[in-house]
Image 1 (cartoon, helix red, strand yellow):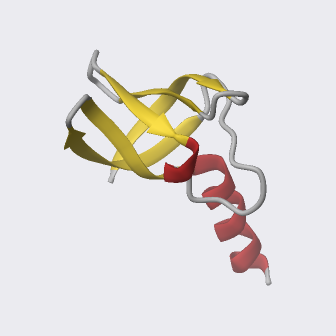
Image 2 (cartoon, rainbow, N blue to C red):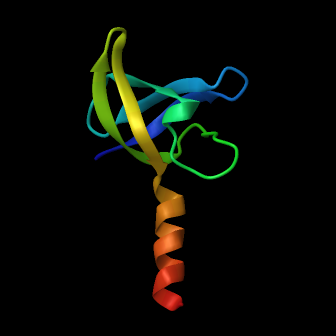
Image 3 (cartoon, rainbow, N blue to C red):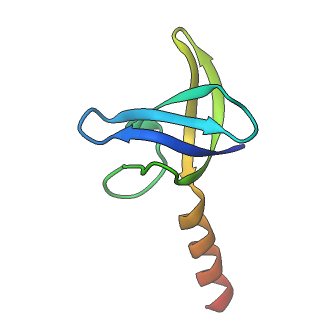
Amino acid sequence: MTNGTVKWFNNTKGYGFVRAEGRDDDLFVHYSYIQMDGYRSLKAGQAVEFDEVVRDHGLHAINLRCKVAAQVHRQHEATA
């Protein structure tokens, strides 16, 4: 998986862009690529991890997960 940050995400349209760490190219992300329960949304600057694929219109970030949520979940498991 690749680490990165959310550049921007439009909740109304359901898509946005993320940037991989150490690189200048942006990757497209659609709300359906986000791995989370409930309403799928992202915030600018949010730390994420994802898989990269090349599609007809460029790089896409798929199987995207928010890193903070994963860290909180792991901390909860450690204290349980």
